[in-house]
Length: 116
Image (cartoon, rainbow, N blue to C red; front, side, top):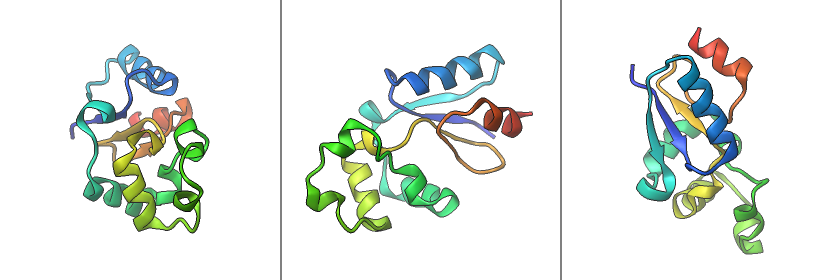
């Protein structure tokens, strides 16, 4: 199964995840949201697996910069539309191609467990 690391190249957490994978010789492709974007169908599939709440990065400046109306009454459909329009709203990184389903965020323990 081919692994894909989704994120934004200049994100610090993204850099940690790619460095961890590189140091262990794990083959993966990189998908940069800023360049390639992301489609709603992919986000819906991830949301089915991990929940849309886990995918949505509420801690970042992009979320804080949204209009109050966009942040109010969030539900899956609205959150996915916002993430498609603003890929920086997606928590990074997302690693796909692992048996457990997509890994959201970077944790050495989670990566070790999934890739051992």
